[in-house]
Amino acid sequence: MLLEKITRDYMTALKNKESFKVEVLSTLRSAIKYREIELREKGKELDDQEVIGVIKKEIKKRKEAIEMYKQGGRADLVEKEEKELAILQEYVPQGLSEEELKSRIKEIIERVGASTVKDMGKVMKEAMNELRGLAEGEEIKKVVEELLKGE
Image (tube, rainbow, N blue to C red; front, top):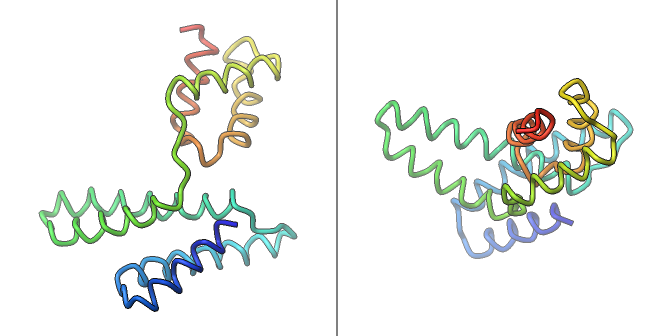
């Protein structure tokens, strides 16, 4: 399980006195713990997809911070956020290529019997469930729209 890998890497970083990595993984473990508590209240279990979701949120935060710091001329903080981003990205599976994404969405469209943009809701629901962690929601939406419009 991904959480176990994060915990092992955290312990290794602690032993090796890698304080920066310890800090990043500690923050990540905390965010995962909060998500686990939220899920438990809903009667659900924490799985790898949920952990990936938390990591992606943390990655998104870092990317937004990098943009803000670049605009503010804070190169020192940009560098710190980029280092954190690199550590976090180690735990996220590589996304699908554009061709793979189109292929998978075509399969979903056929499976749900969608033919027009009016069917977008059905396709998006299936696509988001199936492709979570492999592609960004915006990217999925764009491809679904293209395919349903027949572009």
